[in-house]
Image (cartoon, rainbow, N blue to C red):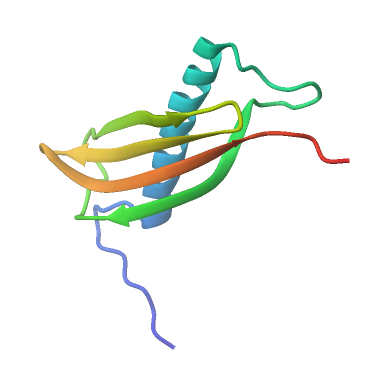
Length: 107
């Protein structure tokens, strides 16, 4: 069985995807707030992650500050799409397209 090797000083891909997901959440929840699309009755949040398509482009540092950028590219009450990226040293290190859907309680 093959063992995955983690490079020292480089964050694990799961950590990077978590950062991208959380930063896209900030963009979506801000957009929802600006448009007055708050949580529906009984829901804790207005939107939840429905998909996250991550592309790892090059290593990112573990111990240095990085830049996160997010842009809402499509906004509707039913769903939103966000382009999000992690950048360091003037280069994108990872990018993602995040799909967010309206949180509706199911009976």
